[in-house]
Structure formats: C-alpha cells, structure tokens
Image (cartoon, rainbow, N blue to C red; front, side, top):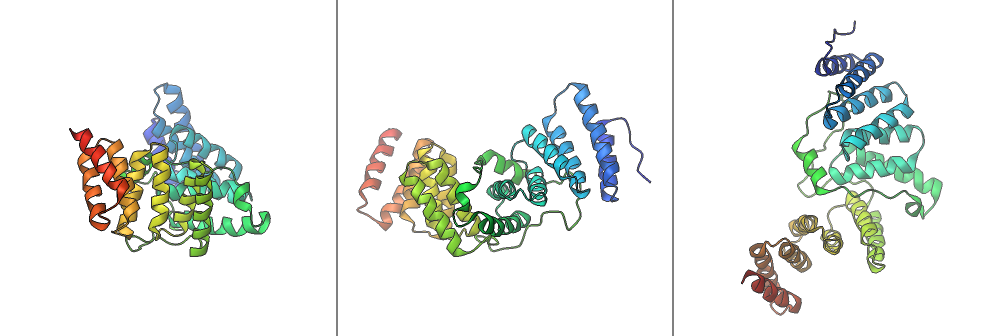
Length: 309
C-alpha cells in the first residue's frame, strides 16, 4: 500500500521516496509529478528542489523502462542545475538502453570530469568505447558530439553535497571504488590514454585549446598517472585564463612528480595571474633549486618581484 502524502512539496517528495524504496516506481513517479506541479504553481523559484524532483522522477522512468521520458526529465533537471551527477548518469543509462551510444558516452565522460572515481561512469565509458569503436571505426572520437567542460564550481558543489536525493538500490546506486590516492579504476588502458594525450597535443599545435582540454580529460579518465597530461592541460587552462583550474592540474602533476619543472613554472604563472605573488615566488624558488639556470623562471621571478613592489 502506498504511503499517505501531505499536500506539501516536502510531504509529496518524502512519500515518493518511500514508494521508490518499496519498488512502487509508477506510484513514486506520480507523487514526484504532483510535487513538481505544486512547486511550479507556487511561483517561488527553487531550481535545486525542482531539479531533484525531475531527477527522482527520471529514476522511476528508468526503472520502468521508459527511457524517452527519463531523458526528458534528466534534461529538465540539468537545465535547472547544470552538471548534476545523478541526472547525467540516469540520462546516460537511458541513452545506452536506446542504443544512442554517442550521447551516452558524452554524459558518462562529463560525470568523470566531476568525479573520476565514479565506477558506474567508468564502466559506462568502457562499454561505449567498445561499441563505438566497432560501429564507427578507428576515427570514432572525431564523430562524437563535443563533451562540455565542467567548471570547477560544479566539481566543488558535488564534493561538498554528496547527499542522496533518495536511496537507490545497491545495484543502481553509483559506488566509489577504494583506490590509492593517485589512482582510479581505468576506463581503458595505458595505450589509449597515450593516444588521447597525443590527440590533445595535436589540438594544441592547431591552437584549439578547448578541444585539447577535452582530449586530455579523456586521457586522464583512462589513466591519471602521467604528470605530463596534467601539465599539458594546465597550459591550455592558462591560455584560456582559467587560472584556478591550471593551479589544480599543476598540483596534481606535482603529486605524481615532485620535481616537475613545467608544473612549478605553470603554477607560478597561474598564481601570478591570480595575484598570489607569494605562492608564485615559492614555486619559482622550488623550480630554480632544480634548474638554477632556467631563464624563463628567472624572468618570471623578476616580474613577480616587480608586482610585489
């Protein structure tokens, strides 16, 4: 028997969650729909609450095999709160079920930019890669829709708000896999990571830094154990004036290789652009201890000192 629900958005959502836990997916979908209509009729915008309700109803559609409506609700959820992990994963699963493998690949890859350890996304990328290689041939990546770049703010939002919208079954709930600090489950193999890195390098040569970032991000989703991929992506971020992202990539590179000269130099450049001159000088000092005669570093040191004065 379905739980009783109040006439409030919160009550309807709670009743929907209970129905979902009981396996009553059609009933849960109806309750989430009523909550949505009530919220929208109130006229007071609450995009996060509305997004959650769309995402929850999408989960019901997915359980019932209604993939088209699942995609519609996930897209509505993402329009309200871009780069939310759960609607991205649910939409990817629906695309995959409908054999829309290119769109599924893009959604799985977007999730991996937000959380590299998301097992369901890593497994999804594995499956999509095999299918797309078979169906589209060796140049399959060139035939994909572009993968959107996830801003750092969205990554921080996911890291700081890991709470579930409703408890999903162990089978459908994304799991994090225990790994070493600098390792994640591989979505392919080392060779594929190298090929993607080389593709990124080619885009850099052509001046297409946004596309290069996409390729480096794909490479890192396969293997994040090569510091050069981080420093290459950091260079792109510097060019695009995304300095905080550049700092993060250089920091990750230095965790892998504590004497990476490029990482110190590019992070110093990013800190300088962010007007964090002390951190910039600290990185230059570390670099010059490794390469005392590094000309660009000496020049940057003078520029930072002038800025301090």
